[in-house]
Image (cartoon, rainbow, N blue to C red):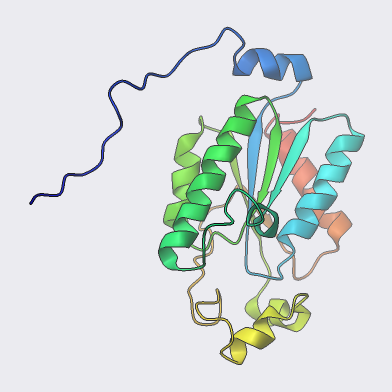
Length: 205
């Protein structure tokens, strides 16, 4: 018996619709983008992303925030935390982020996404300049001191295996578009850093 590598069905053809990404973006009067917030647990990814979304909404921009815990209640509820499942989790979120950007939105995706290859996979889904890697840069020591969900304490006690930063590696971005000093600055200052970076890239006016 031989095992063949699965391939896409040749009968499945991409259907191009009349209403396209550019039309949707023009309707919203904005430039689509995916802001990918990565960092250790407790670094402040969801907190910064949420505060930034609030500010963008005040300025009249159309956004959507994808949070790591929230998607595991639905889209990724069937996945565990093995290396394979975590890769699949990021793959699904990457595809979802791409669809939301295609809808003309500014997408804020907050996920640990510990491996550079996985983040590159998402980057490769999008046009040049549309993927913005945001490194929420806080040391393991700072994150463990914060420990907002008590996860580090459980990981140290051996209750959570393969926990990023403890017994599973986190690969920090080498050259992120936005590097936030989350262990040093206030949330307001971090949001302002994001806004300035988005203006410099003509994502917002």
